[in-house]
Image (cartoon, rainbow, N blue to C red):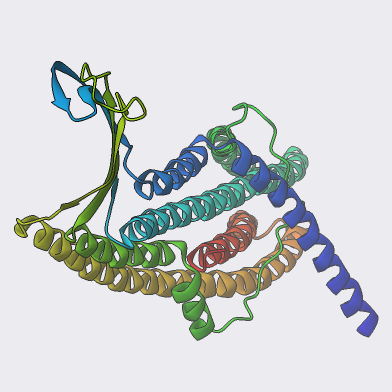
Length: 413
């Protein structure tokens, strides 16, 4: 018994590793190729460039003036003037501007991370749908083979006069219905392959590789632990945190924007030679440097700056409200997906048992029909149940994996 448990455990681990390896390969391809994710990343890279723009000093001002009528001075006529000045904002304003831009860039990065997590969930979900469809095709073909065997038995018994042709006609009807269902599944598989490959941004007809069996996940985290992870690591919430911090810094920057700005500069004046013979040669025509030149830009009209501060404060509160609303939404989504997760787990256990029982019943009915020509209608009914349980089992397997993937997405993973 212990040896059997060890073998089954090793088999499950092999299935898990195989499935995860295949999925990881597709996730890497999607991360590299998906154009929507690339767009999010470029949005983030563009936002990273804003910090240097808003934290730099204004361009220096340079001016040149030429005196059409020179101004006579003691050392000679003034002919031209050069002026160079630099405006300096109030202390700390550039740093506050940089903080605003950096926090908004961080919010863009979290939006990129959320898009990546969502893309990974979409890829996993599409993969699980594909897995179920190809399994449904295989199960349907297997049931068609069983019906064909049963049809051969019915033909032999009909030729021997043991049964009427009704049994064989019923089988033909079942086969026709199943072939129609098979055709629908094969068409659906093509559609799903195209959608899956579009997520990866590869050729539409590229073959998709599947593991033989999906591992059925089992969460060890409690609901409270998942909620804590969502509140701390969900990318949509962390993006709102950075957005809130940017408005905190925006308020600081707006207050400093209403403070005076300082202008420091220097003038250089070109002086020509004077005709005054009594002027000493050493100072005749000497250029004049005037330094320093200091000025203040005083924001007298305060209404604009008060409005900027108020805007930042209101946006802070709006962001807090959006975060509270987002938390409520995420908690509601978690409740729903946990319900789906538990339901898929119950269905998986149920249909494992039902499929086993239906198979046993089918074997008994088939043996009875071969020996005494009875229970043919019950055979067809049990055949349908066997097909249903096999399909429902694989559907539960895929649904539980999809629910697990969505929980990981909510947790920011």
